[in-house]
Image 1 (cartoon, one colour):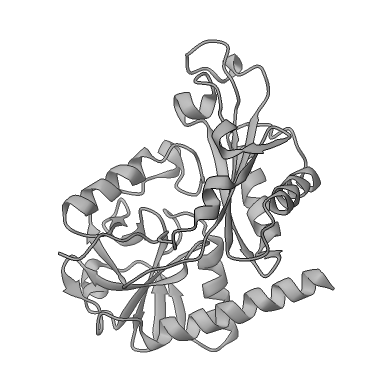
Image 2 (tube, rainbow, N blue to C red; image 1 turned 90 degrees about the horizontal axis):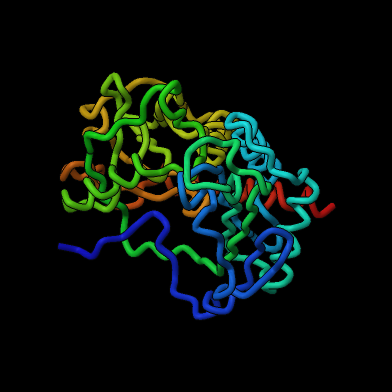
Length: 306
């Protein structure tokens, strides 16, 4: 069996052992960046986060990422304790401290902070939020397209844990990932509660059929920023695109399949449940969307530098 790979596969970079991390208004060495065992994020997964990508000195789609972070924080009644400008300043300060200009990935995390006692109620978090930015040198290095396996774990209804929340509570997705690995795949393909194809444990999912791009309705998946950019690019370039319910039968018979996410942008899929998708390699539509996405990132970053 081939080696296991992930959608966040990156080149090894020794510099990541020497990175500096932002933690509550301080920038400190990796080895010193620690939070309390009483922290809400550690104890209960109580927090929200964003992943950000640095391209040629520019944090791509930063406004959209901050919109999503603040919206998620409001949804869980979490006061970040910093406004947008302060968060951007912290991001840029951390970037400067690490001397990063491109091919970097940041994980911006906010938890409800240190609890006074080891119990659930949010009122026990009285010391203010914990804000962390981990920034690594990170160049994607995927040796082959991804293999997916359908798993029994679902992305469910918003009244349980809304799948649109980028929360620290990721156990459902982790269990899905474990199930996929046990099945000999790289990552999990997750269905919605009606049995339609939805998303993977880490990324949004697309298929290509007869020149048209399909993705889920969006009702039960992460409101992915890269997902929306791909949909917008299709519409702007006369590529038929549909947000619709579709089944595993539709998926197995697709000409191409790919994943979207901040880290990997557009990641090709080789197979689903042992069925080869297309020729099992990067397809022409996926390649075209990759090119259009790179052009979009360059255009957006150029505007911000003006």
